[in-house]
Length: 137
Length: 253
Length: 124
Image (cartoon, rainbow over the protein chains, first blue to last red):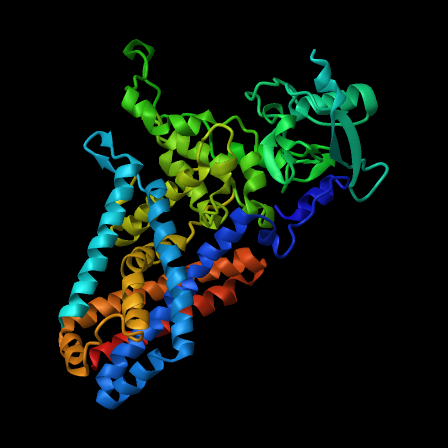
């Protein structure tokens, strides 16, 4: 089913592959690529998180060095950009989830609105939980 | 007719491709009256009747039911019978054949690929065994109807294929409308073809090429939501895959 | 009855395996990463929140349960990245024809990273 298939049996058909950067021309497509690129923000942070735990594991000196790096403009800049990306990931993920999930309660189908509310409530609970944990340790 | 309406005009930049004359498509600009009750299809009919009778395009019902007049207007896939000229004023309006399909002539695309894919997903009710006539109809409750009704509204206009960049890059992808219609039959309580369709849909050409761009659902004139159908199918297909790997004995059917 | 679908032999995709990891990671990342990133990467370094001292963090991570939670977060998120980034390369740059090396690179990174995370969290 390649582009060549048409050419073979119907040489007069005109068919062109989309340009390499097909997504730059339309905002909906740009937003899609940005949504997909949020995975880089997630990847960046999990590497930081593991480094954080390893720094604690290595002792107070390593922890101090890492804490200082976190205060550097480079780190703050990267975290700032990554934060926007991961927020965008969370919002798009929760908003799109009701489309993929069909949940039945008995015979009744739970409306997407309820699933959306449940998603955001869960996000709130997890966020509050982690906040509580780091402020009370 | 209101006289004021006929004094203003709008330009249409129309995609032309005449394979016997040219190897690359060109654009012709036509000036048509900007009437408030005219849709793009009316303008094309005006061009064909009054300016250039060689212009080729498909249309039929003129009321958003048949799904044959889909084209690109300023880069967006639309039904030309449902898009008013005045919404594009002052123009110009760039009219092109549906994106991602091979063009046969002017605004006419070849739909062979879509028809083949539509057939592949078995868009009909599959029953394991026909009931004897005496047992009566295959009954369905309103709730059972609601499960698939949204997906049954498809008019095969192929706007979703033009909005789908994945189909543009990978013509082997079965694509939005066919997958939504597969789900329409899968969710029908009278149908037992789920497993047969799963075999087709869970291949690499099926649902797994989709990355949920979501534009197919945005452009659908019937609010079918193919993107939702495909994601739901990914969930179902994933459950099925894990079940068959973890409990191979339970997958007899 | 065997499912006779067409003359072509049917090859089921193995995508469900990776997609399941992608989805699980997507949920975990959506729930946990924004708050954690905001606190450790922005609020604490900028002084908007009191920095928990070394002792407090050590006590927190000494608990195997916290390390298990961190392992789940980092590993599933890594697989989420792998799957999504693989398709970003396909879609954004037309790289579908490099399916094998791209997939090998993305999932390979996630597997190695998860193994390293498991090792370092286990030997904390």
